[in-house]
Image (cartoon, rainbow, N blue to C red):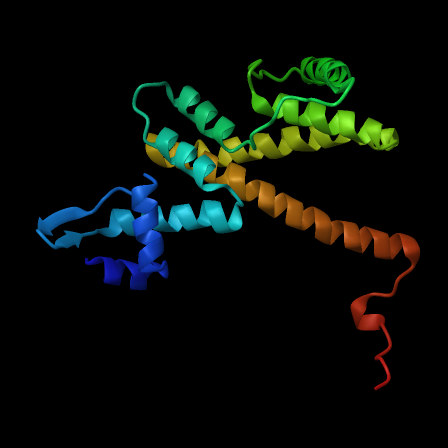
Length: 223
């Protein structure tokens, strides 16, 4: 198909498609003539994946490129490819510059390590999620919200259950490429899904705690 048809099929504008090709996210089409390039169903699927990771998952172009690069890797084990793609989805982190922040974060890093060991999780030392969690712990303390840290163990237990379900579902796939794509895609979209569900549940829990009537029980507003 020509680029115009690819745009029509996927709903992605032609300039955007060309941008993704320039940025290395989308493979170039096959040149069939000096001024004609042909695309196929694989390009359409890749475009759908790119738009999903960017629009729904909220990944940057750089993170999306890194994820897609790892999806097609052939120079590593399946577990290694999954790990690299996982790590690519984490936001970049700058080194702390505030006075005393490095020391406070180091304390939080120790707590994260203790939590992982207490749970018996097998997690590499370079997993960037360790540092993300340590940063959250540090900032909650800085804000005087330390009581919220009492939820960490409960959250960890729930995360362990969800992760086991995640891996259990995708491991049923026989195609290694499809398996890695599923894990990475669901890692990104699962974060979005869980965040949305949590916000819906928080509104409901707050309404119940405060005695707010259900939407269908509320009296209509006077005009």
